[in-house]
Image (cartoon, rainbow, N blue to C red):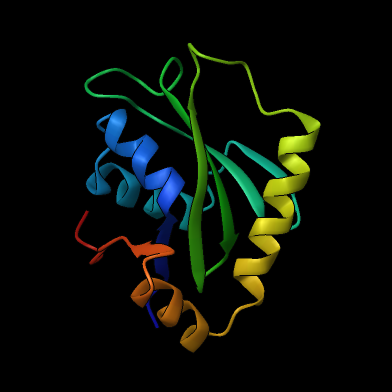
Length: 128
Protein backbone atom coordinates (compact mmCIF):
# COMPACT_ATOMS: atom_id res chain seq x y z
CA UNK A 1 0.00 0.00 0.00
CA UNK A 2 1.31 3.45 -0.90
CA UNK A 3 1.72 6.12 1.74
CA UNK A 4 -1.15 8.59 1.99
CA UNK A 5 0.07 12.20 1.81
CA UNK A 6 -2.13 15.00 3.12
CA UNK A 7 -1.95 18.63 4.16
CA UNK A 8 -4.26 20.63 6.36
CA UNK A 9 -5.95 23.80 5.06
CA UNK A 10 -3.70 26.17 7.04
CA UNK A 11 -0.58 24.50 5.67
CA UNK A 12 -2.02 24.54 2.13
CA UNK A 13 -2.64 28.32 2.33
CA UNK A 14 0.88 28.91 3.65
CA UNK A 15 2.46 26.65 1.00
CA UNK A 16 0.57 28.47 -1.76
CA UNK A 17 1.78 31.85 -0.44
CA UNK A 18 5.37 30.52 -0.43
CA UNK A 19 4.95 28.96 -3.91
CA UNK A 20 5.74 25.56 -2.39
CA UNK A 21 4.40 23.06 -4.91
CA UNK A 22 2.97 19.60 -4.35
CA UNK A 23 5.89 18.31 -6.43
CA UNK A 24 8.35 19.70 -3.83
CA UNK A 25 6.24 18.24 -1.04
CA UNK A 26 6.31 14.83 -2.75
CA UNK A 27 10.09 15.05 -3.08
CA UNK A 28 10.26 15.73 0.68
CA UNK A 29 7.96 12.74 1.31
CA UNK A 30 10.28 10.51 -0.70
CA UNK A 31 13.25 11.69 1.40
CA UNK A 32 11.31 11.17 4.64
CA UNK A 33 10.29 7.65 3.68
CA UNK A 34 13.97 6.98 2.90
CA UNK A 35 14.89 8.05 6.44
CA UNK A 36 16.12 11.58 5.69
CA UNK A 37 14.53 13.60 8.48
CA UNK A 38 15.95 16.84 9.89
CA UNK A 39 14.56 16.45 13.40
CA UNK A 40 12.36 14.05 15.31
CA UNK A 41 10.17 16.10 17.63
CA UNK A 42 8.70 13.18 19.57
CA UNK A 43 5.61 11.11 18.94
CA UNK A 44 4.57 11.29 15.32
CA UNK A 45 6.11 14.74 14.72
CA UNK A 46 9.10 15.43 12.50
CA UNK A 47 10.68 18.53 11.01
CA UNK A 48 11.79 18.57 7.38
CA UNK A 49 13.62 21.30 5.47
CA UNK A 50 12.35 22.06 1.98
CA UNK A 51 14.10 24.24 -0.59
CA UNK A 52 12.31 27.37 -1.77
CA UNK A 53 12.18 28.12 -5.50
CA UNK A 54 15.69 27.51 -6.85
CA UNK A 55 17.46 27.99 -3.50
CA UNK A 56 18.80 25.26 -1.26
CA UNK A 57 17.25 23.86 1.88
CA UNK A 58 19.46 25.53 4.48
CA UNK A 59 17.91 28.98 4.11
CA UNK A 60 14.57 27.81 2.81
CA UNK A 61 11.41 26.53 4.40
CA UNK A 62 10.70 24.32 7.41
CA UNK A 63 7.76 21.96 7.63
CA UNK A 64 6.31 20.21 10.67
CA UNK A 65 4.76 16.88 9.75
CA UNK A 66 2.83 14.08 11.45
CA UNK A 67 4.25 10.87 10.03
CA UNK A 68 3.74 7.15 10.37
CA UNK A 69 6.32 5.26 8.26
CA UNK A 70 4.79 3.55 5.24
CA UNK A 71 1.24 4.61 6.11
CA UNK A 72 0.35 8.28 6.40
CA UNK A 73 1.97 11.70 6.38
CA UNK A 74 0.21 14.99 7.15
CA UNK A 75 1.85 18.38 6.59
CA UNK A 76 0.69 20.44 9.59
CA UNK A 77 2.70 23.66 9.75
CA UNK A 78 5.35 25.54 7.83
CA UNK A 79 7.56 28.57 8.21
CA UNK A 80 10.38 30.31 6.42
CA UNK A 81 13.78 30.15 8.12
CA UNK A 82 14.12 33.89 7.43
CA UNK A 83 10.90 34.60 9.39
CA UNK A 84 11.63 32.63 12.56
CA UNK A 85 14.21 30.30 14.05
CA UNK A 86 11.90 27.52 15.26
CA UNK A 87 8.53 26.73 16.83
CA UNK A 88 7.85 27.46 20.49
CA UNK A 89 6.97 24.96 23.20
CA UNK A 90 3.24 25.80 23.10
CA UNK A 91 3.15 25.45 19.31
CA UNK A 92 4.97 22.14 19.55
CA UNK A 93 2.49 20.86 22.13
CA UNK A 94 -0.49 21.91 19.98
CA UNK A 95 1.07 20.29 16.89
CA UNK A 96 1.68 17.07 18.88
CA UNK A 97 -2.02 16.95 19.76
CA UNK A 98 -3.08 17.68 16.18
CA UNK A 99 -0.68 15.07 14.79
CA UNK A 100 -1.86 12.48 17.30
CA UNK A 101 -5.47 13.19 16.29
CA UNK A 102 -4.76 12.65 12.59
CA UNK A 103 -2.71 9.51 13.23
CA UNK A 104 -5.48 8.00 15.39
CA UNK A 105 -8.05 8.33 12.60
CA UNK A 106 -8.99 5.38 10.42
CA UNK A 107 -8.55 5.59 6.66
CA UNK A 108 -12.30 6.05 6.23
CA UNK A 109 -12.29 8.91 8.76
CA UNK A 110 -9.39 10.53 6.88
CA UNK A 111 -11.30 10.10 3.60
CA UNK A 112 -14.25 11.91 5.18
CA UNK A 113 -11.96 14.76 6.32
CA UNK A 114 -10.70 15.05 2.73
CA UNK A 115 -14.26 15.02 1.38
CA UNK A 116 -15.23 17.73 3.91
CA UNK A 117 -12.23 19.86 2.91
CA UNK A 118 -10.49 19.70 6.29
CA UNK A 119 -7.52 17.88 4.73
CA UNK A 120 -6.26 18.00 1.15
CA UNK A 121 -4.77 14.99 -0.59
CA UNK A 122 -1.32 15.55 -2.10
CA UNK A 123 -1.02 13.52 -5.30
CA UNK A 124 2.31 11.75 -4.96
CA UNK A 125 2.41 8.96 -7.52
CA UNK A 126 5.93 7.79 -6.78
CA UNK A 127 7.40 9.37 -9.92
CA UNK A 128 8.65 12.54 -8.20
